[in-house]
Length: 341
Image 1 (tube, one colour):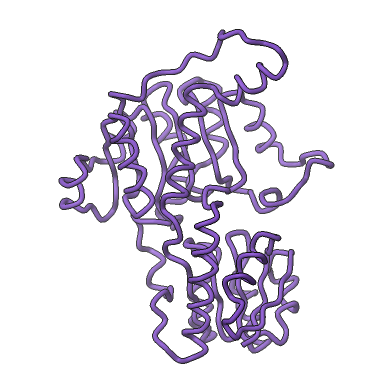
Image 2 (cartoon, rainbow, N blue to C red):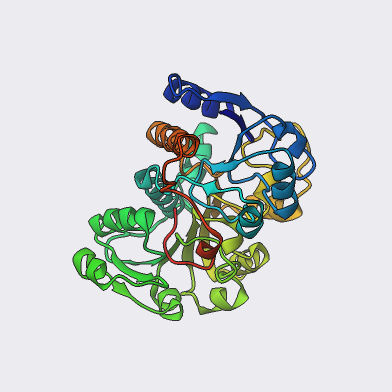
């Protein structure tokens, strides 16, 4: 099979070529993100391999079908950027990587929490400039505080394990609560309203669906404990950015750690340091000294990249050899919420 990969970075190519050296697949690489305007780049491919910022909408799916593409392989867990109904109509299966390293994303969420709490980013720049003052750098003990975790999938459960190790109380919300897990982990499931009201730190780990899109808006922010820390390593559109900015300005939100952003496609994974930022909302976010934005790098560990390449190539080979697609995503999966990445 011939596979065309989109949105490819050097590290993607390195891991896929190393892991797939003897897989019998022909891999081609494009730096550009797949969309309806450049779908012709997939000409001659049996499958396309896409990532989070590729746009695989109905028009793109139809274009792929017209070119004879037989499989859409996501090298990520989320699938909100793929029109699954269009893919089903065109007879193109969609496969994904449901788990690559829950430790990677959970540990990144903790890194954001610790950096924001103890103002590590501000201290770093101060000391490099010879300023060793502690003014404005005070944090709080995480021990004894309450963390609210939205979604209790693999990543969230790893995060909960770490936070419980800090001595934190954990409350959680999930559309499909797991009482057995809650008892084992020593957590309680609560309503979103109660979670917002009680939590010193809120961390989002739910998939992006019609139900969860902009779940953090003006109403949610108004329900949160004043000074709450908000962390998002899930999907950018879980948070309405304007509402977040208002919450930061009003000091209802004390800090925000964002590994994702709702309009990230034009910036994340690219070096744009030589041009003026034309996204006023992102520029405003970056102006807050109590906000840390990272470039959707929560997954970015050596182990995770290898697991992504290994699972993606196995998905493609399963299709090529007519085996059951254990990681197939179907249209009816879209409304399912609760457990993510």
